[in-house]
Image (tube, rainbow, N blue to C red; front, side):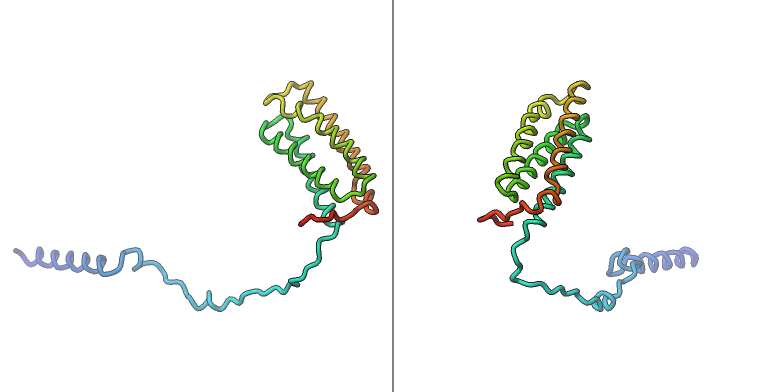
Length: 172
């Protein structure tokens, strides 16, 4: 063998052994994270009262009213799109109206029950077909908008502020 071949062989063996080594190739070339920086972060502590009062009827009613309004508007906007989304929006809007009703006194409860029954009457039309005809769609939108306007006019927070009660035996 010539000196060139021997030298090439030695260099090749040296390169192979230096890259192979004990650790994997990736570990050799990846920068190690500085652990001290991570440990210097201090946890944030938040004090809270373990004896929290029961939520007020005003806040609970406002939340349900806001959720009803959102689901109802979503229903009106999605009537001509997805069948599953349409039925989900209808069910959730109806559910939130029924939850709103729990926070009202007897007179307002009866008034809201009338509007809930009108909304329930539209259930077969909403859930009837996967594809609604344009005439049915327009009629349904008008009916839903009318119910929305009536609820907003008579059951907004300022309108029922004096009629709110906390239901007994309910956990929120």
